[in-house]
Length: 253
Image (cartoon, rainbow, N blue to C red; front, top):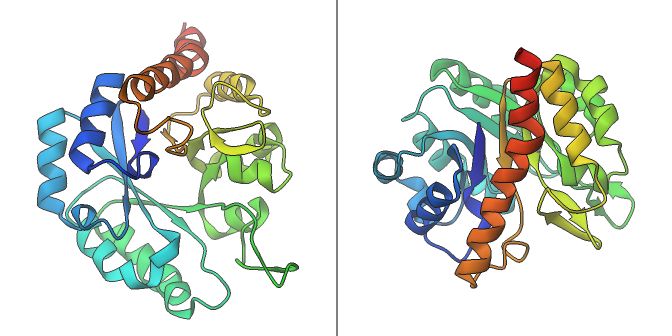
């Protein structure tokens, strides 16, 4: 399935985001639990699912407020079943979140039949040379468990996205689709320095069967210009179908 991330249009309300994603042809949604209180309301989220026939298949957590949002995150995701929890590793001084991620999140996922995936983030440092987050490289992530692979974050870490397929093998269970265009991270998948076409084609031939989330910036989607936003969203769906869905179908013949 191709999911649309709720953070892609940060200045839109959730209902309008669902409406646009449905019109553009996405298969489902990923909700980021953030300071937007609408993301804290499971009943409202389920109403949006039903109204727009767009299932919520993944949840992530805002890295800016992860410790403050832990309780809300738990309360929201436990009202859903069979979703993917795409969680980033803790920063060096987020001791509460570190403990929660290690001790509580795995039990939460097991109890409510979710799949817990650890997501790589763009590199950050303290004082210019101390890594801000532990276990943010691919080898460390796969040793933790299942992985949500963020393609732009991988590129910003100077890693090859094609090699990541080999490194992660069966551990890669969710993928954030985006590209880097003219040095702008989280651009649309269809144009940029990353060989997304080859990446999707290879995954299709290998029989990858887990979900993708389009995770891009509002600037890339030209948020505020509804016609351009919709066209870019539709182009992204078409790109995914061309290089993944069609190659998947060909591989099955």
